[in-house]
Every structure is written in structure tokens, then in C-alpha cells.
Length: 328
Image (cartoon, rainbow, N blue to C red; front, side):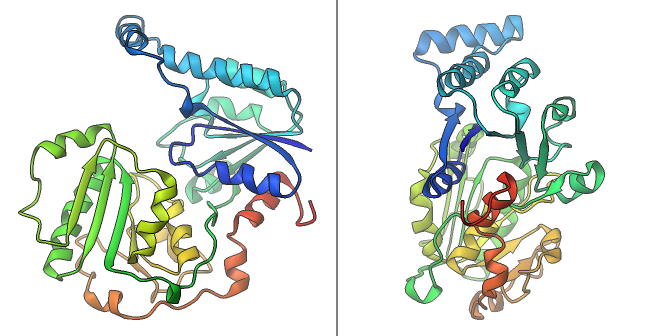
């Protein structure tokens, strides 16, 4: 069997799908379009002019050509998974469709934020992590997955009370300001990293009062290597997870916390509906963050039952998405 994954994969999560498939003896390939960038300054300049005067993004066209050139080399695929089809124009998806008899997609952005309804008819199966979209459009519900190995909390030496890393989003930044103030009042140690092009504005000014020693808040345009993230997670008792505007699905942060036996603080109320929800491990913030206190950090983590944990592993995810069984 041949399976191809096509995605942007900014945070390097999708590579784990390919690795897991290969471990099962399935010929798998990952066409990662985020690796396609401008070759030099001249290309960047020409593209800037093209976007300004012609409303045409040459980098996007370059990436779509890269996908089609890669598929031409790989040939027919038994299944192709496109993660978030908004990345491609309709004509490119129609050409991708010709390389397989089973084209599937996983929407890990909701349709309110990233509308792609005009492209979905091309897919044989549509998976979504967003509860609202599943109910409204009849997509098949699936969550993100546990990709890290399970590491018991007893084998980790934590120094921080809370850790959070996120891409830049104005709503999240507003929440971070409130949280940082509250965490300092509680005299908790935390580290928060906000990554993205817009972060440069915050690098120029102090958006908080002077940060006390051992409390860290970092705005950066430089991406943290994905392989470095587990060491940050392991060093903290609690992981923070804040939603984007209109988001209802669960982010990867929830599943990273499960694998490392970390507590979660979130503003996503839909987490209550999942079978792993335990108020001892998961704190759902109220609007003013008044329910955040030290007791949540001080009480011990309670392990998730093994049968529930297994439902969220990458192997289970692969079985469902590609219609495989554990013997594949």
C-alpha cells in the first residue's frame, strides 16, 4: 500500500503520521509545502510586488507546483491525505485527485475561520476536530493524537509551574496578559512563548510590569524547533492551552499533556465532553480567570485509565483515518 500526506506542517506534527505508517511496512511519503520558500531576496521582492499590484502570490504558486511535481515522481497512491485544503486552489486539488482513488482530508481549523466548503466535494472522506462543524456538516469526528511516548510524571524533574507556547494570535495575547498578572500574584513560576511575525512589536516594548526573576515571557519571530518542545513540557507541572476565536476542537497541547502526565489549564469548555476529562487534571478558566489558584498546581496528577488513553494514540488515529487495523 502507498499513502501520501500533503500538508503545510508548520509545527512538524504531520511527520509522525508518516513515521508511524512506515513502521507498519506501508510505503509512505510526506509532501511538506512549508519547506518551499523564496530562494533569495530577489524572489521575495518580486513576490511582494506581485501580491501588491497583481494580487498574485508567487510563493503559493511555487508550493502548489512543488506538490504536483512531487506526486508525478511518486506516482499513483492508494490513499492521499490533505491536511487543511485551504492551502491549495481548486485546480491543484483536482490534479491531486487524479493520483488516487481515495482522497481524504482532515480539517484542524474550523470552517468559520478557514472556509473551504467549495473544495470539499473532491474528497471521499472528511474528518474534522471541530464539534460544531461535525454537527452542522456531517463530517466524521476525530481529535488530534498522542504522538509522544508515554513518560510517567515520576521520572521527570519539574522546575516550572506552568509552560505555554503558541503562535501569535491577538485573542491569546490578551489572555496571556491577564494570566501573567495572575500567575505573578500567586508567586508561581512560568514560561510563556508567543511565536510569530507579529511578535516583533512586543519585543520593542515591555507590555507588563518588570518581570521578576524566574518568571519568563518571550515574544519571538523565531520558531522553536519541534524536537526541543518536550524538554520544555517535561520541566513544567502544568501546560496551558488557549483557543483561537471560534475554535472548539482540542489542540495538540491536550494530547502532549496526556502523554507526559501533565495537568492542563484551558479556556476550551468543550473539553468537558471527552471521556478523559477529570477536573483534578483539567482546569477550565472562567472569563476573568478568578478560578485560577495554587491548589490546582499543588494537588497530584491522576492517571488516565489505559483503555481511554489508547483511544487517543497515533496508532488509533491512523486506524480510523486510513481504515487500517493493527496488523497492517
